[in-house]
Structures are given as structure tokens and as C-alpha cells.
Amino acid sequence: MITSGDLMLFLGPGNPLQAHTAPLPELKVGEVLIRNRFVTLCGSDLHTYSGKRTEACPTVLGHEVVGAVERIGAGHSGMDQQGRLLSAGDLVTWSVFASDPESYYARIGMPQKGEGLFKYGHAQVTATDTFHGGLSEYCILKPGTVLLKIPPTLPLPVAATVNCALATAAGALRLAGTVTGKRVMIFGDGLLGLSCAAMCKTAGAVWVGVAGTRSRRLKQAAGFGADVAFAAASASSVWTTMQEQFQWKGVDLVFDMSGAPEAMEQGLNLLAIGGIAVWAGAVFKNRPVQVDAEQLVRRLITIKGLHNYNTDDLVTALDFVTRHWNRYAFENVVERQFQLAEVNEAFAYALREKPLRVGIRLP
Image (cartoon, rainbow, N blue to C red; front, side, top):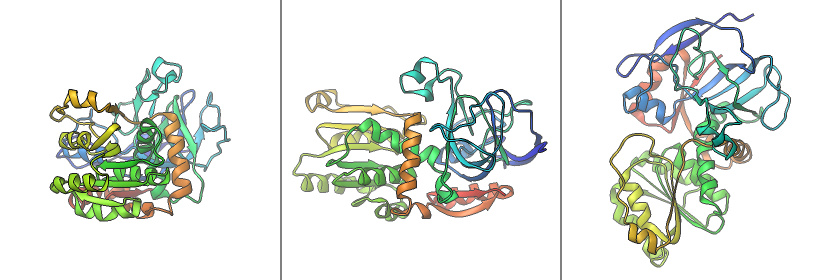
């Protein structure tokens, strides 16, 4: 019987993560014990580590994670979201949140805002609740968490990104509506933006552009289905190209995965009449976005916001990557892998080199 597990505690910006061993509690009703297998450091992990966003400390970071079922507690259905039987050793991914599925927002399709909300990789460690992040040997999943079995053919570094970047991109496409035959512009050259490009191309978009600030990332955009990649620093070239290519009509859909107010403002200017903007990147404090309300009204523009994703989006993301991970460059997303004890080196590398992802492989 497993009685304890190792983890890396985050104590706050400017402090190295510290190795810690904690006892594993008895599972409560409806909980599932997972042995973490692979974790990727998401942009929000880097923001927390560097102090750009604040989390209650100490905490166990890491929410882009895949693991194996270790033990299923009493009161759990023993099945995943799609009704498939779960057994010890099954590889699974799970929602970044747990919430009451019967609460108001969950019932109207927004479980990420449901009552009793808990977010993995973002919660404070307490004497009785420790194992709830990816940078740990184990994770205890709470009732109200969506689990999905992962096919054994899906590489672990690819599978780890499903429950954050890919699921959020899937949610953005859901809000955008029909993508087939549309012209799409994406602001943001991180994994969220590139995953969105791949999903749009697969969904039948006739043209996909990606704008960003990092030349290294922009060079990778073609591998995710982008027709053109623009350096955001030369925004005028974006507008000129759009206006020439689409005869001043603009694009049909704009996704902002950057969180930059300038990008959201410029995206609105690019939209054709009846266009839709989906904003998913503004998850930290910044200046207010300036919107020309008259133009919004006269051009029949729609703006939609997305934070995290819902249950169907997670299912869609896993289905997409299972079918298409080897069509696009998902296998190259994790540039370098580290062990759990090397987490501080992993953060330093990610902040210095700015790869799409670094990975933490656990035994």
C-alpha cells in the first residue's frame, strides 16, 4: 500500500521549488488516486513562477498533466466521462477544474464556473489537502472532475497538453461557430494559438494567419496549419496583406490567445462585416481594451470571451489530438524533458529559451 508521495512545493516568486514528501490520505467518497506520468509547464505556470500572477502559497504547480489510475475510491462510478470502465493502470487526462455538476453554471454549459470550484495546480497546500498538482508523484482527483481514458498510442508529451491548451482552443472554436470556409486570424504564437490554427485548418478554414512576437515560435506555425505567420512588431504588414488578399473585406474570425490589449484592438480592426472575435488570452491584469462602439455596431461585430473550457471541449480536444497529432507538429511541442527533482532547472530553461513547452517525466 502506498503511504506517501514526493512533490515539489512552490513557495512564491523568487524562491526555488522545494522537494517535499507528504503522507497520502485515505481517499474520500468519489475521489480517484492518480500516479502522475508526464507534466508540461504551461504559460500560467511560468507567470506564477515569475510573479506575473499570484497564487496562494505553498502550492503544487502543474495542471497540464497525464497520469495512470492508481486507485478508485468508494462512491465513484468507476467510469470515465464517456462511460468507459476505468481500471488500475489506465492512462487518463482530467479537467483542470472540479465543480458541482448540478450547480447553475454547470447545468448551462459552464462547469468551469460552477459552485464548489476547485482548480488543479492552483490551490494552496494544507495539512489535509496536498496532492492536487502535476509537479508531484500523485494527484487526488475530487468529485466533479471529468476523467477521460487516453489511448495508449498517444505519446505522453502530447497527451499532457490536452487538458489545458488544446481544450481551451477547442472551446474557442465552439464559441466561434462555423469555421468551414472562413478566413481566420490568430493573435498569439504560444501553444494555445498554434493549437487553434491546427483545429481551424482541420475544421475547413480557407486561410489561417498567426501573429506573434517570437520569431522562433512563428517559424513553427506552418507545422500547425498556418498559411502565413506575422511578426506582431510589424503590424502594418499584417493589415496591408489582409486588405490586399481579402479585397478590404477583412477576416471572418479573429482569435486572441495573447492577452495583449493591442492585439485585441487590432484584431477588431481586421474583422469583416459580421465578423466574430473570440478572446481567450486575457487572464492577467492589463490595461483596458479600447473599443470603437460605433464601428462595432455598424459592422455587426461580435466579441466573445472564454476562460478555461467546458466538458464537451475536453472531449473534443482529446478526440482531435488522437486523430491528428501526427498530421501536425504536436510531437515537437515538448522541446526538452526533465525529472521531477530538476523542476527548478526546467523553469529556468523555459523562461530563458521560451520553447512551446518543457516536460517533466515521472516514473
